[in-house]
Length: 170
Length: 271
Image 1 (cartoon, helix red, strand yellow):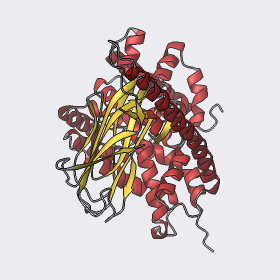
Image 2 (tube, rainbow over the protein chains, first blue to last red):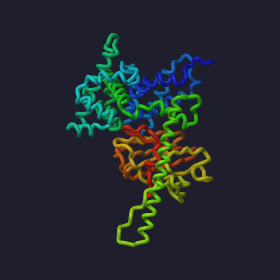
Image 3 (tube, each protein chain N blue to C red):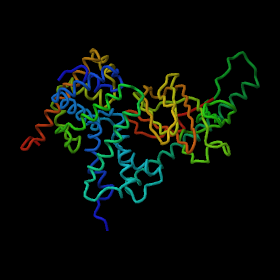
Image 4 (cartoon, each protein chain N blue to C red):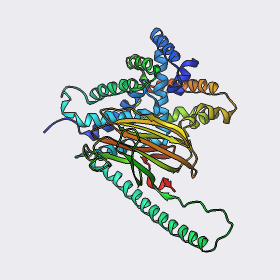
């Protein structure tokens, strides 16, 4: 009997890391989950090809890397060729946020944000509004919304890093 | 960090021009600190989306659904598949109810027309009743030309094996056009995803949403977004072609609060 973990366990234990891995290559958010699903389907179909000494997550990342680069190559836009190179570059950059096990860890950091920032984050991520729409409702330009979102995400990153550090707050 | 180019890229990848994308690459290559910041931003962006976006909460079910569609589920995720089955049964019940309600509507509308015909008046002509599903035209060519065969399709969810296309005995070269209306179930940005082999294109309200009109050897995925208002009806048109071998065209949608699903027939109508 094989000692290989069953597919359900692999999926449960790796999906968070894998979805972050794909997003970390600059794949648009609305494509990340579909691409991740393609990765798991490919993995499921070809599990017998996985060498026994290779961790499932490493094998999955290998599949994901190829599918991500294909995603950029498939586009007819020339800009996507540069974004494919950006993806390859970012794939080699490491970040402590890659190891956030579940997005639920964000909640305490979100709680610390000022009300207006929380409102902007909810509009963007919960309601799926564009920067233009958020700007209209808050009396800001879309550029100002983009920069503000950038700063809010940086603040959340700092908060998460503190929590992930050994001895950091729970 | 407050780099406008990085902010624009994070906001909408497709909005970057060729020059901007080239500039972004050059700057990330020459500045390791900026590359690290960009990576952190992407990961924070993803974490926020996964935590807050309702349409990203069904990841395992969607994988189970896709394996089921492909007929490869095997021993996979028995509990997940059962959960998907329960959802499907609930949806089927809703679909049955919708079809019966639509049939009743047709009967009422038909009686109304008969009454109008028996007593000619100067009233303006009543609008034709809307019937569920989309009007489909199938062509034995790859370019939507020539004689067509018409029928009504409840939804766009087809996987024709090689040698068994929609036009019996007419080979694996074919094209199709579906026209009608689509009624939104939710308000906000809708994502339309098509699994297609070969090409497909979609218009809503006359505006192009997906344009992937190329031949290929594999099933690809095309997607596009469009803002819809709940309850509102929009003109809807899909064109598709298959250049040989098997043919696949399966149309999904999702929106805030609406998990991804094959667009059900109750949301389509035609006159």
